[in-house]
Length: 400
Image (cartoon, rainbow, N blue to C red; front, side):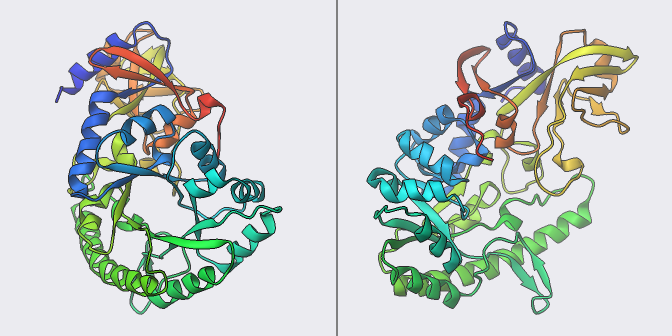
């Protein structure tokens, strides 16, 4: 693995003919991260979370690699677009209220065979039926299990507020409801343990907090593995030919893969390795997706100003949602200004070696959200840009 200084030199050489701001993906790092996900999945296929990639060229690249199968999408419109583009196995990970999209899905045999929609409430079935507009295709359905950890008799909840279905019999009852309703078929079960997969357990300078996170995650894994296994048994009693049970995320690949009840793993952020994955003990990835902002001012000693850069990530607001100046190492935000909409001052001794027009390379806090800011990703191999791939935005697609 190259040193950060060597990587900076490579990226600067590779993009010298391009004007910043710009975004890159280091394909050597991307491929190495893909290999690591497959290794950790231990023989179970990895379904790629498209929201963490948002580039069709890179989705095609990773799905061409052994160990990857299928896409986990984030909106119905995106799902239909990907299916029309030739992706044959698209699991929509979130319920939708896109009536026009459901009408299109129910009217097209190819789309109906390729796309599976998420359901956790009979009212969602009603919405789909009202949206059919004469379409008679059978809709493939996946049920979602609430994976949150409940403590102290349910008075404390740890985990995202997603599905209302927590107990095995609740999932089995919905499976019976779907199976009894013409035009629908249950094909899968999903549970995303974000409190395990999406929370770092090695927080810099916070040993007690890190210890508490590890204890929570250990308890959560044990509780969820037992409940998920029981849920799968209950649902399979209703739907014996269930096609898949999806679980996991980049931060919990190996733990989730160890559950016999799980048949496939979801992951996507681990391909780019944004800054939120710096705080994990279970794996180490290589930063693959970066963006560069040009130096446009030198306000004083130890200070430079770059153009733009205020690209916060979704989630609860905080410092951990900001991108970080990555190369050259040693730069930091001005606490009075942070990452700005139009300009961003950066402090630190490396600023004195930067000239007008030089680049500062940043890492985004999360993965695919970077692509909402750029129309293209310049793909780097060694010290050359070997291709330029449009992001969803570059193809005129902004699904959320």
